[in-house]
Image (cartoon, rainbow, N blue to C red; front, top):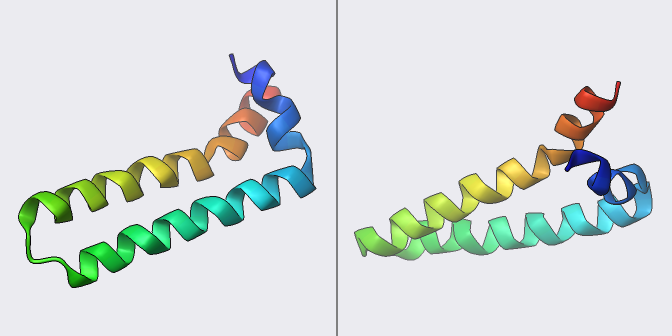
Length: 67
């Protein structure tokens, strides 16, 4: 499965754009965390940030298995 992701993580330009998009999503969820008083919204934002951080580490995971 990781071999199918090599074109994405191996292309610096493409990965940088994708990573910037992930950063923007994380910032949106962080604002929700800062502004929300609802525990459900807070939990969802925390879960979203956790999932997005895992996607950001994908490049390292693919590189470790490749190399």
